Length: 124
Image 1 (cartoon, rainbow, N blue to C red):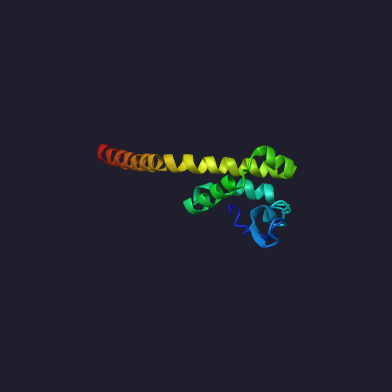
Image 2: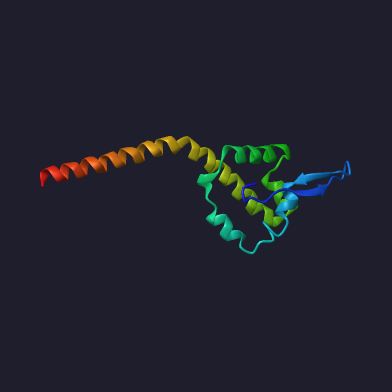
């Protein structure tokens, strides 16, 4: 979801039917098997996250009962990814809360610079 990796099909142990699994996709070459994964995580633009993507993340995190302990038990490499997803989730909600304030501040800063420039022109 966050890294634009679609879920992979996995055969269910209970029903024997195919189902979509983000965990199966994460274990593949696009996430945990990618040698550039640390770079991708650092370069990830958190400001472009959409509420739709975050709803999918929330759905996956709540339905599976994901926790740090379960991720560590399943795969030691997954614990870092789990922490990154949780941190990205927190960033999203904080950013959405302060974004209007930040935009208002940037607008007032721009107005201040314009007024300062006008005052400078008048005094010269």
